[in-house]
Length: 88
Image (cartoon, rainbow, N blue to C red; front, side, top):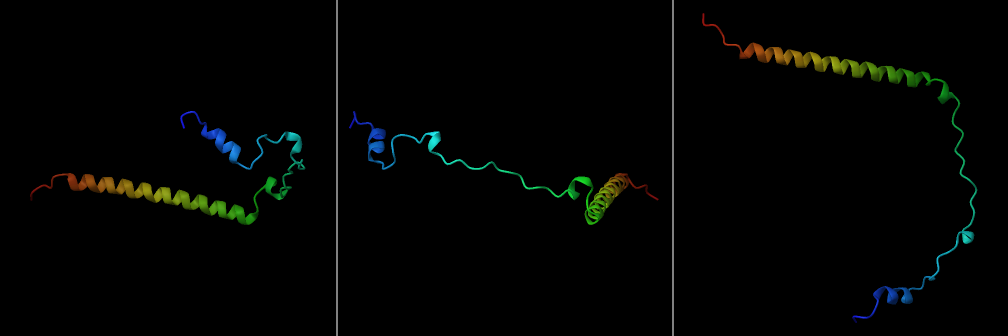
């Protein structure tokens, strides 16, 4: 089987046509149109959305503040405990 091309055998045995379809054989589809967006979304967010954004901003700022205070407090406590205690 040294002189046999397996690809030639496979293509001869397959039931698909050997020629590829030309672009004229494809069906034409109408162009895709994007859905009309809500005009309200372009102006400003809805009142409930604005409230949610404000709440999330306050939560993020509060969380960052708490993390900062706990970190500084932890470092200060670690320094205080690392200092040698005077003998009285």
